Length: 101
Image (tube, helix red, strand yellow):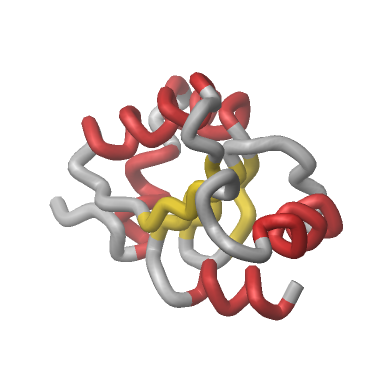
């Protein structure tokens, strides 16, 4: 779990994803459309991904995508899309330093 905490604390937006997951693709596209450059870890392409998946599960996120903003777990697709629809996502991104106004 310490490895994941370190990984998410190094960048404003971190997405744990799988390259074959359409929901992950949708979230990555949303962030790119917002001009946010997230750090993306493709769990099906990196070493020791099983450890990361177990740590994410221990944090309460058992599916991808798992999105962290400002070092905090925000959630998956449902949470991110809900924040976007309520217009709460951009302020979070600005506060985390991921989006410039």
